[in-house]
Image (cartoon, rainbow, N blue to C red):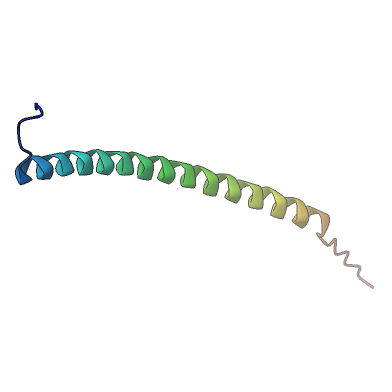
Length: 69
């Protein structure tokens, strides 16, 4: 566009649609990365809880001795 051409409403609308498309693309990429990161964090958290619970169970396990009289 040169300086003498006027900007029409359709030009502005086209540019807004282009920007909106770029924003949508970036947002989708961000959602995908957040979903993968959230899954990895939750799996790691479950693993840590499992290991800590297992160790606590071993430490507090009771040995029961039964004798006949």
